[in-house]
Image (cartoon, rainbow, N blue to C red; front, side, top):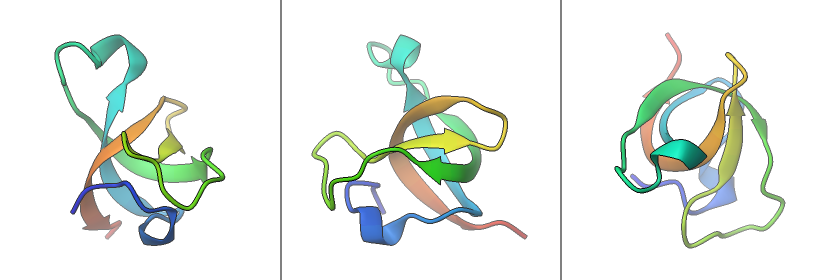
Length: 67
């Protein structure tokens, strides 16, 4: 599942994001969502989130719940 809809993303969810510096390469960084930074219900390039480790990027893929 991709991360274009805000309703699908919530704190504690494990996701793969693309950091700003990795947009050209498409390299994904995995982590757990801490905050949602995009207020719109939909974003074509992915909802912007802050991970628990502080990294910020757009959700490229939803992996699942943190276990």
